[in-house]
Amino acid sequence: MKILYAIQGTGNGHVSRAREIIPLLQKYGELDILISGTQADVKLSQPIKYQLHGFSFIFGKKGGVDHFKTWLSMNLFRFRKDMKQLPLKEYDLIVNDFEPVSAWACKLQGIPCVSLSHQAAFKSKKVPRPKTIDWGKVILSHYAPTTYHIGFHFDRYDSFIHTPVIRSEIRQMESKNLGHYTVYLPAIDDKRLVKILSQVPNVQWQVFSKHNKESYKEANVLVEPVNNEKFNLSLSTCAGLFTGGGFEGPAEALFLGKKLLVAPMRFQFEQQCNAYALKQFGLPVIWGSNKKWIPIIKDWVEKPQTHTFNFPDETAQIIDDMVKKYARK
Image (cartoon, rainbow, N blue to C red; front, side, top):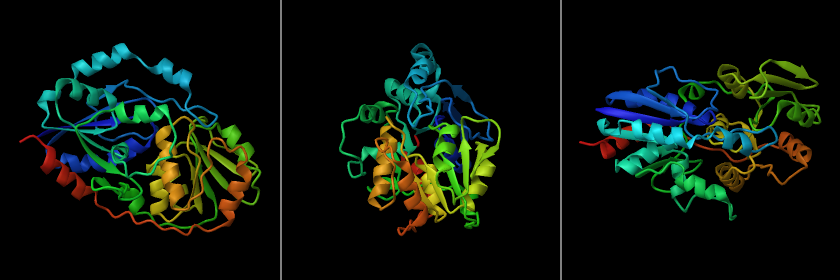
């Protein structure tokens, strides 16, 4: 059996989940990997058959998407060329993690593909989401169209939705509390974060920044470039994680029993929905419209988190069910 696994390369969550799923897919046949996008810091150890430009949302430095740089990075001519050159008919199963080039190529060629992603969960109307009119809804629905859907979310909101895929390295970690707080807010410049976090003086902050290439410490804030091993160590020994409205990062923190505070990116509908879902569990959220961060951060540091989450290891069974159900005979 030949399998194509197409992965979105914006952010680290998709690639982190792929590191867990790739070895499982390889058990069922010959696996080719496709990645499009330019914003991931986490890398794969397996060879990549197709490295495509795709469409990436570029992180800004003030809490949102940099629309101008995102627009500059888009190349419709290259997108169409890459789409037409993919030899999709030679694959018995095409698995898609919110990757647009292969998704649209499948749609235009009439070839079925399976979405295996957090975004697939939003096909269900039962998934919590804010009642707002947002152009991001359109993007989420049409960015990477697929035939079948297997979704992941913080809870089993529907029959095709599962709890998050937690990496084996995270599952095997011993969770400790050494008192510091870990911060990963890729859409905010580290200088801006230092200015905010230093106003909570009785806490040691460990910030991982996409916008800085060297480590430095200012007041009670340590800033590190993004590094998977250092981040995992910081997360496993922290008291809590302060991060954006992504999915995999918050899920791993909740699995480890860490307190969680999220500040979803402005103009990013999926992150707004994730934050809204976490809010239903009683977790604190800093919305883009809120300019007074310090009281919320101090309150989060001082109070315990009462809700606990259970994310069992079901990934191998999900993959097995998917292959048996959707692979072409």
